[in-house]
View 1 (tube, rainbow, N blue to C red):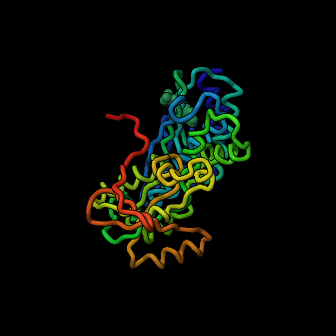
View 2 (cartoon, rainbow, N blue to C red):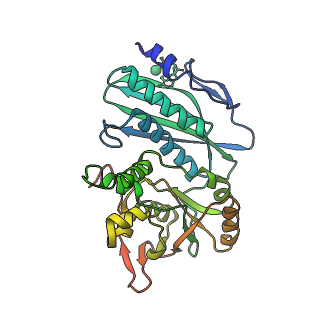
Length: 319
Ligand code: ADP
Ligand code: MG
């Protein structure tokens, strides 16, 4: 199978219903029409075998996760995901691998009405790069900068399940039901695009938790030139993280990545409106702390002293 029949078989047929795509796969470039009143947001994420996924994973899951990780970047900006291009490097044109990969890709894209508009296919060590494009009303995309002292810090959901799945990858004798639940969190994360409008209306800053809460909230603080005080008892933690980590659960969940929940800040003046908006959508926001003028990340429990927290998370280039 050559590169062209591979594209025609496994990528071109993936259906979409996006009216802004003037034309997609098949030309030297795709043509997209940004609707009036909208800004275009662009983000790229690469998944490398052995770093972001294991050779033993189902190609379906690798593709699915690659899409969700990219969709999450749009969710973090308060933008709706619209189109992706795919740069795929393969060791060989293995038909059964490609069929399963294409199925996972198609399922994930269809779920969010995202069009595959093009890409590049090359031979080499397996890696998947997606570039996602999204739309937000002009001037309304939410950035990492913008958090102000007194703003409340919110999380969209519980942390730690994906990191717990990674920690147990090679473990023997764990409850198969627990294992399945944790692997689902790792392989099929749910990006929080449903918070888009709430973020556009009320958030002063936002980020998705890909490298761990401590590291990612650290990015908001750095970009906004502020610090944060976290109420450690209020951080929602996945119940299985409590089971497997015991006393260490909160710190484990804070430094573990891959959750793809959102962390965002809101002015105390807008907090009630935000919560009302979320409740209306059947969503929950968890208040976990407050922004402070003093730089750095601090944590407090009900009865304990204030701790200085390390802003550590996953980092590809240490040192
Ligand atoms: P060119 O030689 O001009 O770079 P290619 O032969 O690489 O074009 O690609 C042909 C068409 O197929 C282009 O429209 C390109 O965007 C698309 N394409 C290539 N690889 C992929 C892929 N993995 N997924 C989706 N579209 C792809
Ligand atoms: Mg090319």
